[in-house]
Image (cartoon, rainbow, N blue to C red; front, side):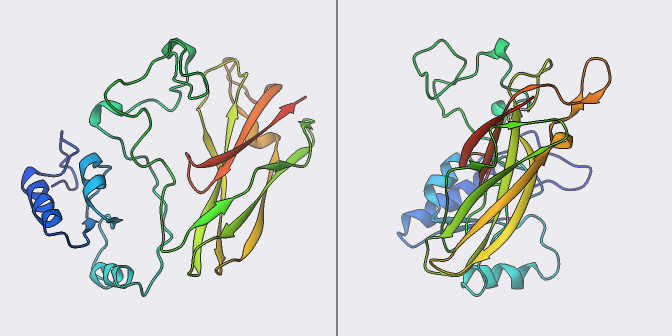
Length: 251
């Protein structure tokens, strides 16, 4: 459908393939959709039809063996998406989409006048960092070593991750930061670190991320790479959407 130096304007899969998926779904058999693509796709209907979706990108000469290992359960996948998958092509937005001029939707204040879609959910279908496996994981609330941080100090953010499924598996725990009071528009969430851990069924592990002044710096209007005092939010989770939140203040 798309390849080097040749892109498509439509990010849905071709109609002939959509018709095939519908026909296969009608059989009542378990349906696994294997994707081979080089860009994010809009898969809202396919997500509802398929029992599982395996993203393989362009897997190379050994891709068939790797796909078979996953499909037959010989390998427990743990990959994470390096981008978000939108619900439609109209939903590509800037990383600074929380600009006050756009009046972003707040789930905690649903009755306020904010910008949102009336015919579709606001967020992506699959967020950045998303990925499932044959087991499940839970992440505890964020614990911070201190509520404030000096410029020459650091704050350590920790969570406890537990394997709540029946198989040994791996997942990638991710930490994101948000500068709440910056003088310039900053990303809603900015990836600052990650750690891949493997847990047996019922096993738990504490994952910690140290945050220092370098993690808070950005290029300001004076073309200085610096961090500004104020509130910072910390998000830790298994992807950019399913996160637990904490906050601290840079003095």
